[in-house]
Length: 431
Image 1: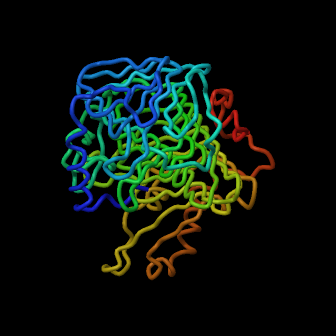
Image 2 (image 1 turned 90 degrees about the horizontal axis):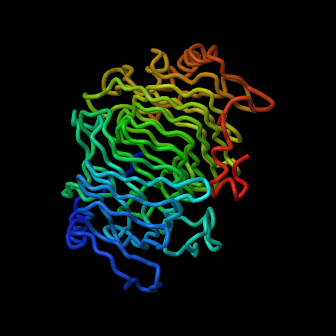
């Protein structure tokens, strides 16, 4: 879920440290261990440019694609982020009004990874890092002008990972069809640098990204925080693989209302959390959007984590999704007003009973259908008295929606051949 954002003093130092780097982008070959084909990039890109596959591009801190600028990345290009935490964390940021045109192919994917990765030009994988190597650089952040529901009725947010006084960190607006460019056949690996206490960069952050943006055939591998996190927006994704994230696979916040189709989440490691973590609107604006997650496979390789956590006014549909290996499949949050005789508050549970949140045509291999979804609340003083009746109501609402216990899955990701190009498939983690 969204981490506790950087406290004011951390933000001050982060902003001061970054002021000098967010100037016109520069390229140089004076990195600490230079090679002839390395191009080091830092700061603001204020003119459209192309990164080519005959070079390795090294991110030194934040690289920002500015308003009106397009960054084109050729198929087969390798981009490596430098190590560093806080204000020194490396990341590629596409600001509002900027565009990225990163279109790889199955044979020549575009790879974002760490400078510690020994992958070379022309290769699709190195040999020295694996699924346990996280937090080696930052990640990718794309910010658009599509609707979001942030706190206090705001329609504009400041994305986590960027100092509060930096304008290039803003996202959200009133244009659901906003276009931030195209990502296709892109693999993002070994990221999640820490930028403050309890706050790390996601593999791919999408803040207010509109449905004029095209995103498909995306892979996130071994990120310390979430694989992909959505802060509102309307963008649609398909053919997505997330493997060995240390927090959540797909994380939805601020009333994201797009569709994610044909996806695969592989859980593993003691620090992992949810396959799906879903929140709804945070404020009083743009509150009626409904997400759709369909045709997905979510599995744990070692029993860690849970399948999904639906909470904080989550609203939308999860359909044709399989959950494998978990002791907890789909958790549904309920909230109460403890100061008002435990009156029920709007949450995922109320949307589930009211029909604006649904789990339908999903499958598990163990337990009973009722085990697939479980109501919970952190407010035990209120919840203890109603837990049984709440669970019965949820069972009644969802048990007739085609969910099933099966001996072999018939649902899930519908086209696993779409994942053949990925690191996860080549390492044997896609079944």
